[in-house]
Image 1 (cartoon, rainbow, N blue to C red):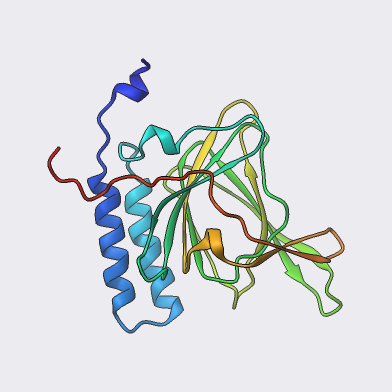
Image 2: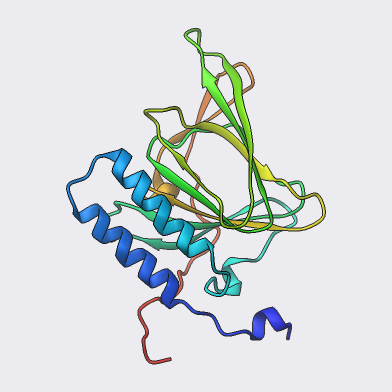
Length: 200
């Protein structure tokens, strides 16, 4: 067994993040406050790399993996690990809900797009996130982007937090000319980590 699989996993970090984000959403706050304070919480989580269970960090040779780590019981938010093999990425897509992206391992490249009045898309910015970096997304500010692993020779892992059960949200991918195609992403896993067993 590898050293990575043998190391203890501190799931308390993820449990604390989930509890703190739920408490934030319990407060009457606008989206800007949620994104600002949620970004700080996510930065704290991805600032440590000892809490993600190995089962939710496994890449696939076929495509990137989207593992559900937690979904709020009222589906107010979900926490997902995205595992990118070398060269893997998404099509251009939207979210329709607010989102936060934090890199845990490797590096992630994000190409952001602006939708013009005629429906076409133009690339607006390109950025790269490294471990500990966090980026916020909002449909009100424009949330159309394409994401990929910035590394050509290693896997990368990013932790995404969305203002809904993102695997069940009806969203769109976009052709280069801006033509939308509806999709529901689902998840790669059938079971989520047990955050609530305090006996260990």
